Image (cartoon, rainbow over all chains, first blue to last red; front, side):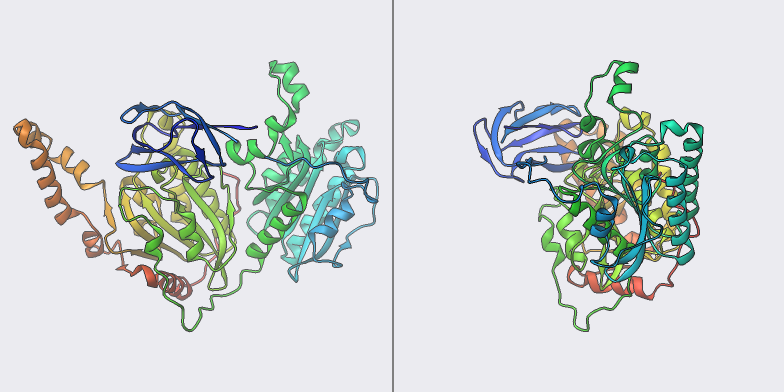
Length: 73
Length: 470
């Protein structure tokens, strides 16, 4: 069982959240969409699995490196 | 990340056997060794790769863990010099503990001579390294001096191993975290391509050699079908997307992405366009919004210089919101490393064509092979924007006082109106075309054809410089 941690790559705000803990996701699914540099940047899963923790809510401002979610596969 | 299977029955040949590894690299049956097998720790040979001649050397991990002494290093230098004389690519297959301790400073001197030979050949013939086992100390810097490094699942590269690290710094780390595929593919950028098997690593090196050394010529199809490449981008211009499907659609067939997981906001790919090898540099909006930053500028700079050194034309796909702002970036030397990208493009003499797909802003506009840096042609798709920054941000600065003086309820509307005016005067691609920094707006479905025509009609060039691992 591998836990994949998904972190924010840059300072950004959370625009939309698409998943909740317990959701099944496939590789490449969009977890959340961040807003930064006037762009909407989808955050995707690298591997299929189940969303474990979700640490962000819409509107929240994230710093580089902040944990967004974990996906257990 | 690697799957561990049950151990198979012991094979007849030691899997580390250098002759077996060389044979697995070259076309079947084509291997001829350069010197007979000895206890030097190195075996070198010649053969063919997809029918073209190449030379390769392999450290012999069955003798003293592949450690390199005077005689072994001599074999490597001879192999590189032979390749240089014959103008053929040279490939190193690495599994070595580094310099032979027992030989003392003699071994160090010999390893240094290997480095010097690699630098002599740098930029003149393609040099590809395949790391299949631990490659420590001198064996780490060998691959790092070459053009491309491929790593198999058991490859490890480090200057000093876990034991030394532990005794000096107290850090407790295993060989894989210290210098395995994930570390070098994602964090350090030492490795260009990570593979999931030893054979896949050797096959990737074959593909690299073929792309670098058998470049072919542009031979566009008579009736190139229209492909609407715009459909690979989202309709919403603010939405980020993965640029790799676009790169794949621009190229003919299988492509070789370098540094896929390191600085992924810039994509660097070797592939073929209308039959000829080209290099593609593309912003990837999915990562960091496609911003250029410190390491991605350095990654792109090294790639551009490599392509220039081997006469490989460049295609530059631009969709860049700017340089990534931040204290971390400035302290990380984004100015110093960004300067490398400016230098690399401005110095390149290969044909190099830029296509702005959506937007190109600010300093990043210049860095992505702008006309001012000597681009062969600059194309843009309809609706693309070339500007110092987005219109809204620009008027926010230009009309700061006017906006501040506006009534709070009317400020937003004024801002939007000013932005629309600004866009009309300074935005879009019209102004850029007027002053000649964008040559032409091309239809997405004709992009491939136009890129090929622009690259094929430009005088070929090849930079007269080495390929320092920037």
